[in-house]
Image 1 (cartoon, rainbow, N blue to C red):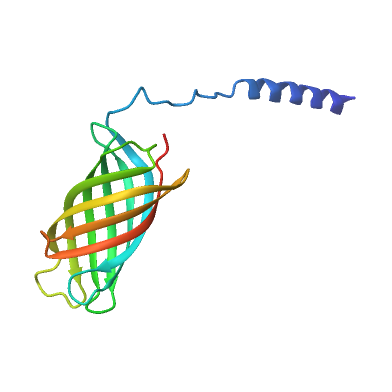
Image 2: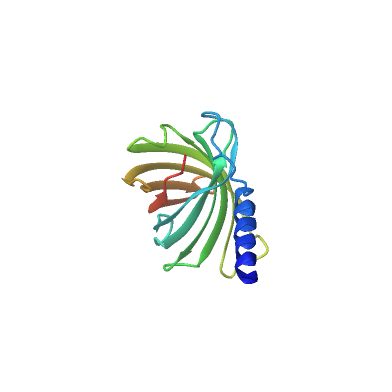
Length: 172
């Protein structure tokens, strides 16, 4: 009988503790615009370096937020090139302006940024700081993914690269 009484008290206390559990309301944005920082998406891409002998290029990029408006995005990226010449590496930070919203089937964008770049067997001039220009188009693939086609003019148009890739669609 005593153990039955202890079980009844334990169940009653457990129910009261569970009733005290706090469930915060879902966080919603006040509206479009404004600065929003955080990991909002990522993408992978492959392509060719059009300068020289046409090295293969692989890269990744992160969507880390917007500044002031939803269409101005911040994007760090990293890429390596290999085959047909010295292996190179580039780490970039770019700002991209998207000409249409996230819900459109096709979204063109234009951007610019800075990069640190080097190559295998680099001398004292590495890593170099480059100014980049980016032009791209995202095309809806699925509700959570987009195809992307990009052109990068690296080092003030001294190096040119074309990419095809897949990127996640940003959550709203």
